[in-house]
Every structure is written in structure tokens, then in C-alpha cells.
Image (cartoon, helix red, strand yellow):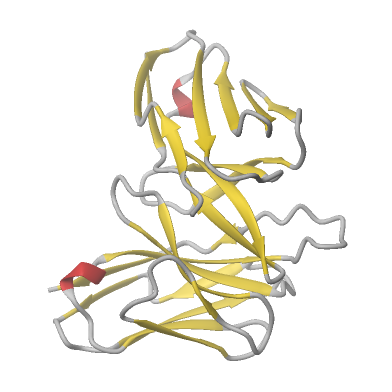
Length: 113
Length: 117
């Protein structure tokens, strides 16, 4: 059974600081996704990582994937208040032709002025 | 494009009542999914449909049934609602990855907030 664990689960940080969210998973997979969720809203796709060593960047966020270590990271550079949200990683088990994503618990990020 | 549309957005039920959550997508995706979201537990897969005419159980299927009505629509039914089914339900769709160049990412609806008293 695939387990996906994120840490930390809660993160409060100041604007301008850097930090990293970690996503560990228990079974081999080459596909990992990061999503953002604002309170009361749906999930918005941030990054799609499709192979070992994949690195994607968008603004102050950068995601990477190490399939050998079964680890993905989401790095935040010089945080701003607008990045406050809950971030989920999800690992793909391709079963019977469907993307069966298993989600981590989410990391609630609060960025204070 | 509307993407993935869910109805209703909010619903309050009494224990034992039944209801159906509706989901439709206009992206011509083959695969559709129902997830539930509970505080501190991320999203958990209830049922999925890899393609029209097929459905399969996910991680937490007990108490639910689904119907893949056609390629666009995938409904979730609670036959006899229980307080433990109080949750936010998300429908999603994706394109099949195998042999293709698509990314396989899921596109989510806005969610349906269900309270069972």
C-alpha cells in the first residue's frame, strides 16, 4: 500500500524567508504532482514531475523529484503573503489506465508580514 | 470551457437519507474520480472510472456507489447517509497517460460540502 507523508504539516514563516516542504512516499513511482488549495476552494495544479531528477520552477516556488530516494521537495524562496495556502503532494499509481493519485496530508503554510 | 462541474455545492442531510452528487467534465477526459477531503487526512479516493463503462473501488468505497453515465458524467450516490460521511467531496478528471504525451494531472471540480446530521 502506497503511503505519502508530508512534513511539516503546519508551517508559519515570515515574509522574505526561505523554506522547504518535504514529500516522502513508500512505493516506486516516477510521477509526482504538487497542488495548492486556498481555504474553501478547489485544488490547483502547481507542478507535474514526471521523471527522476525533474525540477520545475514557477515564480518563488521550485519543485524537485528524486525517485531513488522516493522524495520530492517544494522550495519556497523569499516568501510572500500570497503564498499562504495548503500544499499537497500526490503520487501516481497508474492502475488499469487511470491516474490513481495518493495524496499526502497537506502542509498548511502561513506567511506573516 | 467550464472544466469539471459539480452539483450541489452544499447539502445537509439527516442520517439515513440518500442523495446523489453529480459531476460533469467537458475536457473529453477518459478517467474520472471521486475523492473526499477530511481535515488532516488529505484527499482519499472513493471510486474511480478509468474509462466509460468501467468503475473501480478506491481507498474508502464503503457506503458509496457510483455510475459512469457517459464519458462526460460520473455520479456518486450515498444510499443511507451517516455522520461519518460528513466531508467535502471532489470530483476530478484526467487523460490516460500510458502511451501518450499528456501529463496525467487531475483537474478538480469546486467541491461539494456535505453535512450529515
